[in-house]
Image 1 (cartoon, rainbow, N blue to C red):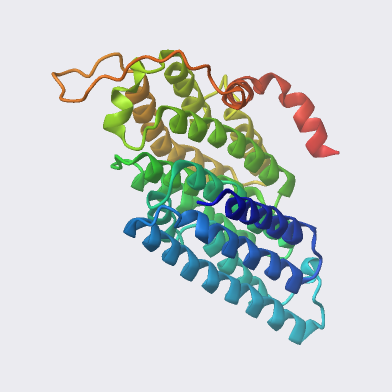
Image 2 (cartoon, one colour; image 1 turned 90 degrees about the horizontal axis):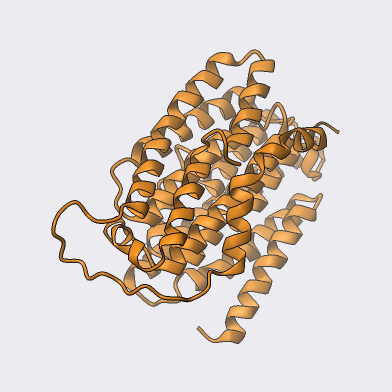
Length: 348
């Protein structure tokens, strides 16, 4: 793609996100979301491969439907209450339609079918943007409207998302699809606590973005798109693969690592809200995700495939590791000791 065109699309993405997260009026928020969608479409389809075109078409149709529902929800609320302010969403039908629209935007179950297919049809870097940057504006709208939304509905969607994200990721061999189901599962953790402590949802999103960035940049560096490629990538950069193992375990939420921090806080908050059964169910369902993270980690760090393989071993290179990967990986592994300070910031 032409560098000037890429620059224009990137600036448009930043502009669309900024407009949505800083707006008080529904029309401005909707306009920001539309700019975002139109800016990412050429980036998804830039390879001109039929799968990339298909991914861009699916993404466009889903996002257009979600934007229509969002606009309908805000107009319905304005019709009954006379309010266009995002935080003044009070009409029950509008709240229900908005929950549906944002679930479609984010890829929450049962509106998740488009997300793994779109991820599979694009490159790792654009996949990373779809998993993180493109989720930020809808998460912000969810944050601003969270007092008005139905907690029971959000809890149901969240538990289903964690269950389906873990369950459907089990038999995947394509890394981008595994990361898509991982994203759906993490969105479940964010959605379950948004009605009770929205700041925790944002903390979870920030930490998830950081860990996912580390994983995607590492995978992009070793050019791994499917599990068989990952099996033989250890010869290319052993240190990077070892670090990938730890980052994946952090993404799974294992205790000594950063990924455990948001899960711990969310379980604590749910217990305070007398939702211990929901906390137990969502914790048990996250074990499904742990299985495919362990599978990825095993493939990344296995020293030799257990049988004679036809794969050509890659030459080890002395190329220095990208500084951004080093910083993100360090943060993905070592933030747990700072949890008291983070908790203090959240509670203020």
